[in-house]
Length: 281
Image (cartoon, rainbow, N blue to C red; front, side):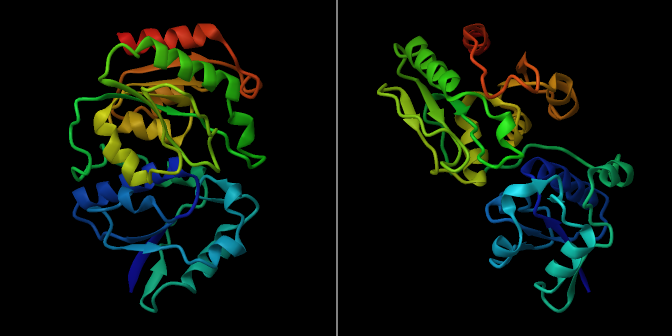
């Protein structure tokens, strides 16, 4: 029988799971396969025994907008185990140590993770551009929307960045994300590219080689950029977590600290000044 681990929850926890599988490989232990949401294959190439994709029916049977760590809100681990085992090949089973709770993860897997940048495959060659990647997060689901910064902040940030670097043709300011989860902002500037819905997770990893900075609220894409050694500037309420605890590669990071209640109405020119200063340094 072949062991399978599930990656169906929040993207930020995928980094932990792939780091654990990397540790298993380093210890020459039995390597599990993974069943992942579409797009996350890039996190397990060269690590997992094999990669399976979550069946289409799961998108009808579970509310994907209610992801919560390794699972979904109000969905028990046993139900998930039984559901996904029905959709595995006959000789596969969900790992008996499959985490569905972050507290269990910290208890069981401490010391069993190796964090490293995900390898790129040379899809994007060095173009000579210095790209600034902005992630204008705008999640619609009720449990995620309180962490959205205001659209006005991102618009003014983008205008400022375009103007600061418009006299140097090597700089490109590029917004990244999906139209379902980010602000779709169009700006008439020659050095701005609205790249929403044009990148997969693998593309973010590949594109990181051209990025000199990533900007956004504290979120999984910014954690990924730090993991890829891209200097990043975050706005959020958990400074130590994102500058130290989950900054696994000790990448240079700027952080503008706000409270949990400030996100949706956030607009502060001082923050934009600090971002520009961070990039220029």
